[in-house]
Length: 76
Image (tube, rainbow, N blue to C red):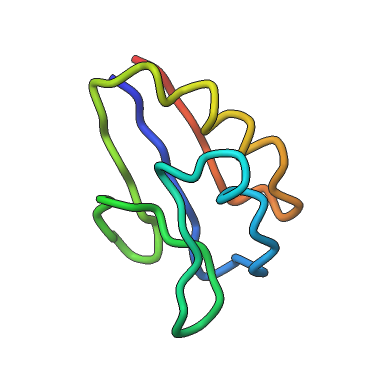
């Protein structure tokens, strides 16, 4: 299982996550912040749990590229 977490409130809208992992992230047209697709919101933390381990590499690149370090990727 791959668990990806995004702290959307702290997003500055740089778009790096979308460039690194366009299948998992896109930018909101409403507020210009990142959206973790198919995620569940819990108190500002958007979490996606996926059995697909092929998304890990691109999401880790997105996490490393994020200048405000609001993306976490964990594998279980």
